[in-house]
Amino acid sequence: MISTAPGVEKMSAFFKVLGDPTRLEMLRRMYTSEHCVCEFVEMFQISQPAISRHLRVMKQAGIVLERRDRQWNYFRLNEQDPCYPILVQAIKELGELPIHEQNLLKIKC
Amino acid sequence: MISTAPGVEKMSAFFKVLGDPTRLEMLRRMYTSEHCVCEFVEMFQISQPAISRHLRVMKQAGIVLERRDRQWNYFRLNEQDPCYPILVQAIKELGELPIHEQNLLKIKC
DNA sequence: AGCGTATATAACCTTTTTGTTATATAGTGG
DNA sequence: CCACTATATAACAAAAAGGTTATATACGCT
Image 1 (tube, rainbow over the protein chains, first blue to last red):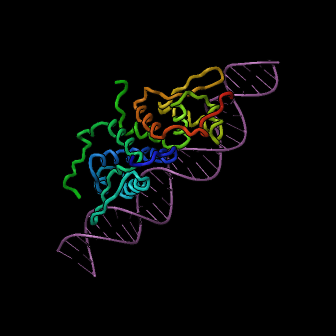
Image 2 (cartoon, chains in turn orange, blue, purple, cyan):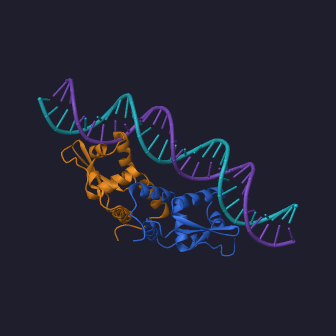
Image 3 (cartoon, chains in turn purple, brown, blue, green):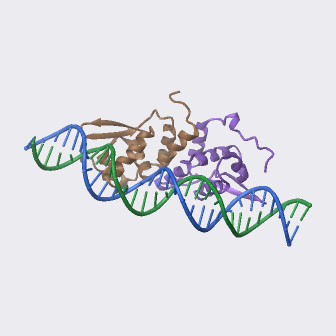
């Protein structure tokens, strides 16, 4: 076993993080691939500081990991998190990203 | 298929409900069996109105169903909810209820 | 050095959440 | 009818969440 079973406190904190549509959508995207902050900034209609804070919340909860590469900061799912399997199931229930919602910013950043 | 795949909005609303430790614990108990309001009132250290509101939040989100029997109001999980499988997985990850946390109020109510 | 891009943090404000107390409603049993 | 129990709702206060703007920091480029 990779990780210990989470308790109610830990798990409800995990769910609280997923309880925001912006964060859930970000996590869904990260399941497909790592993303840098500026990609998320383009993706949503909220300010860059708001994006940064959502990412920090997820990082502090242990749900995502960050990787710094020069001026870019990349975020990805933390597969070691004890709640990771639940996250994966949730993302799978959401199904494929609709084409028009897939990110076309291959060039940007 | 029993229910339609939920979208990000619906699913994050579902997670927001699970994002409170009291509610998550209540759901965990309901997975074992139906419970009436007064049982939850005994179980937690918050007021009866607070318990009632938590139950209403879960009912309005479609996560639980209620059954009225004379002066008692019983709540149970809604197995038809599209997010029900995720809830079950989460509860299973939590593991067995510790003995000292199991409810001994067989007689009350 | 000076500029532009990427990102984080601080300060602030508004909305939502969650608890409390007070009170209303409904069923049960004298 | 009255009292007691079970439960819901309203009104209120405190705390948390989430957005914004302003600003600081770091890197790459000319």
